[in-house]
Each structure stands twice: as structure tokens, then as C-alpha cells.
Image (cartoon, rainbow, N blue to C red; front, side):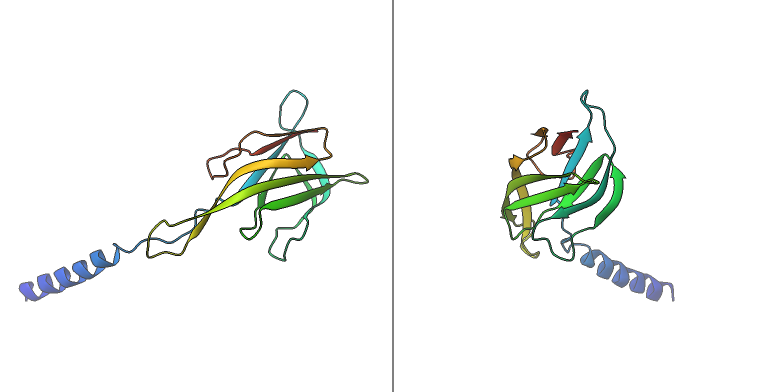
Length: 149
């Protein structure tokens, strides 16, 4: 009887171990740019927005209405290479136009392609002072864009 239980245990253990050699095909979510608002001395500054919109965005874009914060996380479209973000306060509206590149990478041959976003640059803005502080787009990046407001 003991040998039967041992054999069953070995068979189940071998089955579960063989399942663990499959790749995990979970995307890394590197398509998020981080925009921080700061005051003149560089400290985080909360701003209140009536809305934050993206030109030509689809229904899956997160909606920011009546929001107060000092940073915003904006998803990028892998099918595009630019984004125009509009920040609307009570009666004032500002925009930031950014461009970026997408690079398809293969994490594992058994997984689909993943898009890596990189080389973020500012094309234009009507804010007084905007700086791209980190052009690499990754989860470890604290902020990509800093707006002095």
C-alpha cells in the first residue's frame, strides 16, 4: 500500500513539475508614461483638472475628470508613435505633444510579441516649462515628464 501511494505521489509531482517549464507570457506594462507636476523649486504640486484627455483616444483610455493630483500615468498606443495630452483646468487648457518609438521584442518563442516603448521626446507644448527627464519608458522610471506649473 505504501508503494502505491509513493508511486502516485511521484506521478503527480512529475506532472506538476513539467507544467512549470512553460513560459509566462504576461506583458510587462511598459507602455505607461508618468507626468509629474512640480512648483518652481521642484517640489510636487497638486493641480486640479476639470479633465485630462488624449486626442484620438479610444474608449479604453482612463477618464480623468475633476481630479486633483501631482502626477498622472498615461498609457501609450502601440499602433501610434505620438500622443497629444490635453489638461483642462477651469477656464485654461494646456497640451503636451509627445512622440515615441515602439520596438517589438520576443521574450520567449512560445509567447506573442511584446512592444517596448522608448525614446520619448517632446514635440511641442503650451506650458511654460516642460522637461523630458527620462526618455526610457519602464516600470522602474519614477517620472518621464516634469511640468513646472
